[in-house]
Figure 1: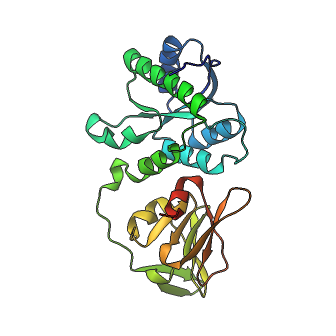
Figure 2: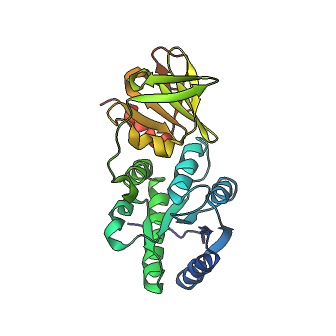
Figure 3: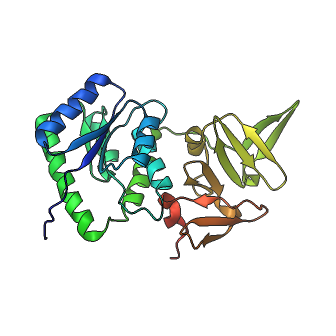
Length: 272
């Protein structure tokens, strides 16, 4: 393969532990002196903002961070990356404290994962892999399979192995009333701050829950995530429509809502 002479990368480092942040930067500086650390973040939300506003080429993301974990950072960046962007999305490296027996889930990451504590040899291997991906991406114009890799990573994390009873009804309080909504009547779940809006054909109610906790309680053959902020009942989907601006939206039975399908989940609605 022809190697391209690429400019030195701009790097983002994200970890909520200052000493670990310093350790990552120290090992990276030794392994890749040309790299410039453009941003150091202590939370997932700070990392998202920096990735959306700064010309970052490579991001090292801790898996466990406040406000948004490393996987959620990547998910958000991919979903909100402008269709008309003139630069590729950053390459991502996950940094994790998970022990070796739990690491299989992270082998699907776009580029690499590093287990703490970071060693010079491990960082050197990661840098070589990053350089290879930089050349490959420049020659191939960024592989689209990144999206599917991140979906796999998000849905195969070690803490999702516990069996969870599937919901049969959703309970929602409205004033003095408590509605018991059969799960098959739900058309769409939409996250809003610390709440979820539950949409049916006849009403919309609010429950205090997160999509992260809700999703394992739903039958995956009936409900699927289509965006970091929404889950749809597949039996209520009439059609998926790709618009001129490249976005995909769903037409739903019994509802005028037209939820957006993010890049991560568009493959679910492609023709066989």
